[in-house]
Length: 146
Ligand SMILES: [Cu+2]
View 1 (cartoon, rainbow, N blue to C red):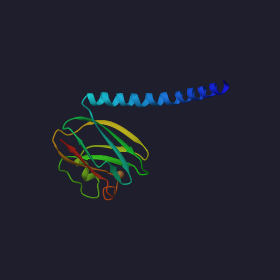
View 2 (cartoon, protein in one colour):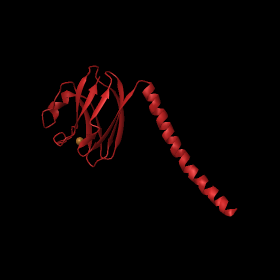
View 3 (cartoon, rainbow, N blue to C red):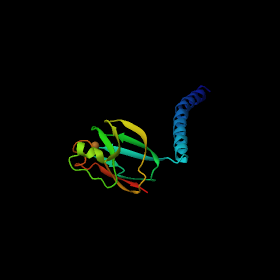
View 4 (cartoon, rainbow, N blue to C red):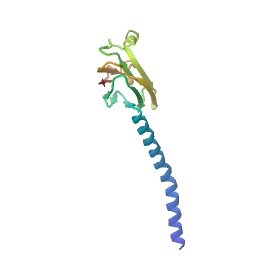
């Protein structure tokens, strides 16, 4: 009898841990579904030294998009959307700023989330990291706007 009660108590404790975790996932899923139903696309970006994962996203023209930039590395990184047809002149510096449509930065170990409206014009847009010498090390990607 004592044994049985101890097992039950352990189960109870386990449930206290599992239930909040399940609730958190559930609330997260509901939130995402609500966002998707509102017509919102999302872009998930993981930045490491020196790469974007994935390196290609597709969104609809003129749509408001929620972008999440997770910087999993020791360096600070940026996700810079260039205007259609724009190409940076290396190194990336002030003379390239006018080519930027939108950008977000995340420090080392930081995840940032922001919404923005993507360009109205369909096309293949270049993504770069604007930190010094990061493009040269391969931090480029592609945003397809359809
Ligand atoms: Cu970078």
